[in-house]
Length: 117
Ligand SMILES: [Zn+2]
Ligand SMILES: [Zn+2]
Image (tube, rainbow, N blue to C red):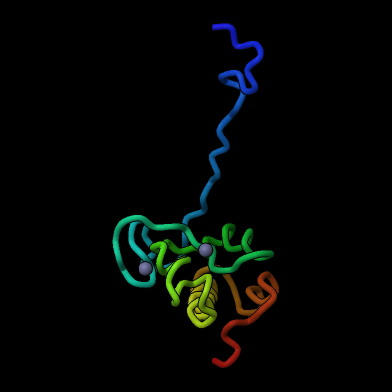
């Protein structure tokens, strides 16, 4: 087959396979919602978003969530601040257990989510 003229001739696109760092969160498993425990389709959620998303990825601070707990329900992590903060506290606790000190966490993520402990 003449591939000339094709926008993306076969072979020229190398599929970028994003490397996922394994989550360090205990009990986190693909196919089971971290919040409600439902099994099935799950989406990967970065516990710390926007500017800190890359650090969430780097340190494995991600969880698998069902679409309801992730986005669509009233208690979805992206719609409910309390749920979001609860996960961020779990994330920080795990970081402090496995990655480094509270100072280090605060330095990287710019916030201490466990200040009242
Ligand atoms: Zn769920
Ligand atoms: Zn998310």
